[in-house]
Length: 388
Image (cartoon, rainbow, N blue to C red):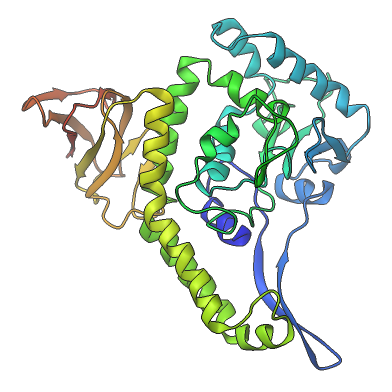
């Protein structure tokens, strides 16, 4: 489950561990199925970002603790974390000046994708556990707006240990959004780890209307692409094919982990059902939490040989997960929400216009600007980008 989820988000705004399954033998004796994966440490960030590993700070909230421990770096690095946490604790992000200051502490795009990954996968072994984040220690000790993004001193979260997700501890109906917004307990709660301390930053950010709108749209973006049911089911099938040849030996040696092939097949089928039904559950939880309207289709048409359309921060091209036909693509979003659209012409072509149709009103409007914002109608919206 963990390796599956890391694969699904590997092209999003989060750090992941490259992994592949293997079987181990000791003196010729089968010793089980394992995953070989990268280790999160100062060498990981030094290699991935070509930075000085001695300037990397990695903090982790684990085992239901309210404050993080230093995995990489120095104990003094906790002082900057405490400064950030106290700022969020003492300020409402509904105030725009406070929100702008918050952007100097955390990478917002990263934080969104990180929370969406854990919420979508119904991972309840988090955020008061397996909550890991890192930053580059700048010369001034804080935020450096003139540095490259990965050296600017802001905190960024990384994907770790999501084995409780995808139906292991709960099914596709689990309201992990409420779990991620818990503010009434600390440490372990029910069948998962959550605490008011570990959810504070996310809760505070959602007080800001701009962040909230961006989070809702981003959740829809990734459910339409990376977490598209077909995309996830295909990834599950690929991992199944990798592991399947060794399942019988695994069951014989470790029946406590895999009682037998039949039970393993049932567990895989449970993950596929999760993939097929999770988006519907999440749409309901988003709708309830944020008082949203109904879900509608946004259909994008274009000549994919001449250009493509970007919706919010997602390029609708056939290189994007979940997109099989970039010339005619449909995604699910909430009526009444504003979607950012941008037309990108390919070499040798030029943008002409957008043609936007509100399917409820039956009205069509043309735009000559390649970057527009469209508020979705109650019956959905059709958008055509015309190139020459």
